[in-house]
Length: 315
Image (tube, rainbow, N blue to C red):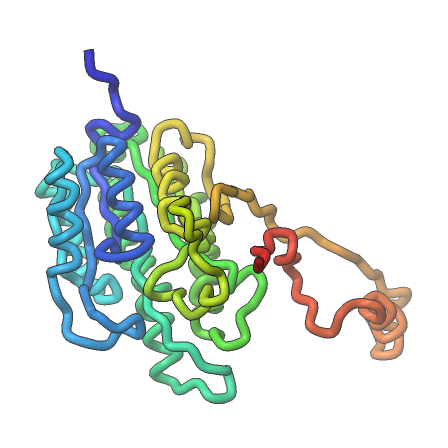
């Protein structure tokens, strides 16, 4: 008697799934029983440069099919509203409905804020943040319509990809950090809006050695003894599989950091200190007297997030 897999009978879209994290996530969802639409625009440059190609998505889809799973490939730019619509429509036409959306597609165009061009800013915001919105919009419309038609909640899961660049800052990535922060806001808003329809939305902050992060992790060597790299995307994909499953029905509007066999649930920001005016409103001098001492003994470059708690140690 065969064992039922966690995602049996469910269908999924994974964006940016031709390489790296997206590929690992698509393979994991298929391993858990989902039928997958593998989306990738297929440009060779991590900055979104080069000719689009169906090859990366087709190769991953074929890998899934060779292992006995169901998969179709989609060559499309999720930052384009109509191409995102076509992606969701493909899942519905191929598998009857969409159940899971994993947003992973992205590019990098790194530069310090004082050197960044308008196009470098716009392109990263467009692919990451608008790309997440576009697919979410059409998936949400699909789930809402199905729920209204049936008169009851449906099954829906969204897993978005944020980054610790949003949590702790990244000096050379103001566009990327801003986009990833926006994705968290999109996720929490979506989680509230779609809960009544049976849909959950969560975001992950993954660390993984991919084409996009090869220089970031250049100082962290792969193990020479054949052990799984602590930065392998395969450490991230099981969490995506879990969040996409019925087991995660009560996990909604959450942000989770994941890498190297570790998952951390991030709390929403909490008030660290509170000051009240002694008069009708604050004066400059009163604010100086109250707030300046609070920061007097803190490092000058400290951010609001204690990223060192989740720090990755160099050997």
